[in-house]
Image (cartoon, rainbow, N blue to C red; front, side):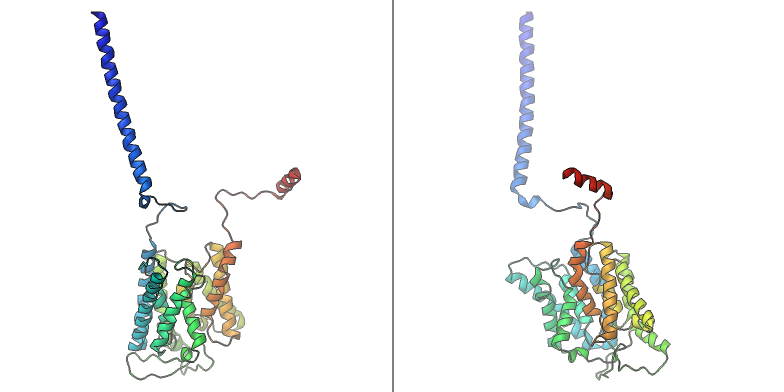
Length: 363
């Protein structure tokens, strides 16, 4: 009787053990199947470099916030320079994404409407004279995307700021049309030619206070989107609030121009609010791709832009130097990034004596 009970007890234990092993094997099979399915499904695997913390700002979101900041200068351009400015803005802004779409198809790359092409087209338009022929605008916008951006590999690979490269191309190719300036006439059909404030032939019949007021508000001759310092400063605060740009770069850039202007004996206020200095400092010198990645590198970049802008304004053939100063410093950006590197986390600089001892020990 006792042996029978022992045998039944052993059999029940064996069946329970077998059931447990079966459950474990089933779970293992399920896990292995899931792993093999995930490995075969490459779309579920994401490989990226550090840091692996997402701030919530995608490239498209950043671009469209930046695009929103351009609305005030765009409204001012249409208000001061009329319907002609609207057609310039429309032509440039439409040409840029169309050109990018065509080139992506030719290169057999996926076209993503992330807003970067719209920004390039709009920035270029806002740096152009109010009466430039529309066909020139189209050529300049196409050049900005096709040559200055896509020829280098697209977004993130371009060396030079595409909008400024397009403007420089137009200034070299069509110097006469690019230097015809007109007084703001709102929506009047006629246009009155006038020199820009930085031009030697510029003469203002009135007090300095009135001149400063007109220059600050934008009621002065110049590129359609660069004249209103007030609205550009509002956009600057907007971009800082959303942490889209580094506030140090525009301030150091403008401060450098102001310092050298003061040392040279020029009117500092006039040099700051005249021309495209504020516009270039806020929108062009803060470009993610074509400027240094480190804080010290950006400071060097901003000082270089300010110094070159001052030199071109004082000694160059052109009255304005913002465009070419930023493009020149764009060319120095890889060199700055090479020699101005951030220290690794936890890095401690070794003493010179310890280094000498290590060298002697190895020898």
